[in-house]
Length: 219
Image (cartoon, rainbow, N blue to C red; front, top):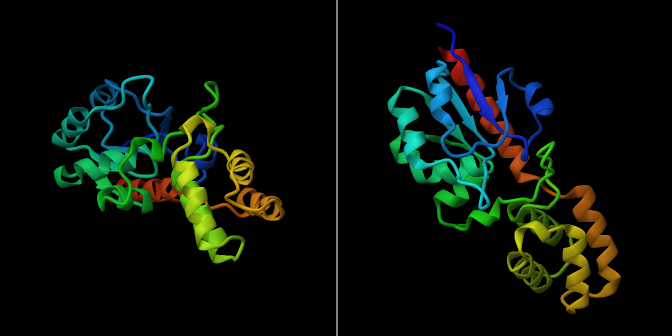
């Protein structure tokens, strides 16, 4: 029987872009009490990229373990998938990507590292996840746009900013206001962040899709 895959995403990568990599049943970010329906419908591979955080109940560990017990291969990465994979990889969930590795190795711990505020109709993010800010500031430091102290100060500012309010415009503006970076650096740094920023979540989302694709082809 041909393997059937369902993918939960929409924030880290759009359904349209994801379909260019893998044809599957694409669903909005996963929420609590949703997986059982797809197990019953005969899906044999699940890719968890994005999920509901904070305001509604997140997908539970037992739900994923039930899917694994039913023989479903579950792949996670990028966002909620990375978080759950770091907690359940010893039970058979497959974790992929940098964000998963960060959670697994204890480099990051908080759920809000990957959380974003989204457009409720399109699921498109309207804030910047902290994991992306981390990688973008690291790239800006390597490119000579700031000193190591400026990098550390801006990262701390981003960490202490409530997740829906995180943006490169807000970060550079507030960083200048607080004296963390000089005014003459602000515009160049902002341009770098917007035009050359690192989107680690979409990179990891692609890895989830590629991994699911291989699993489907193996069956």
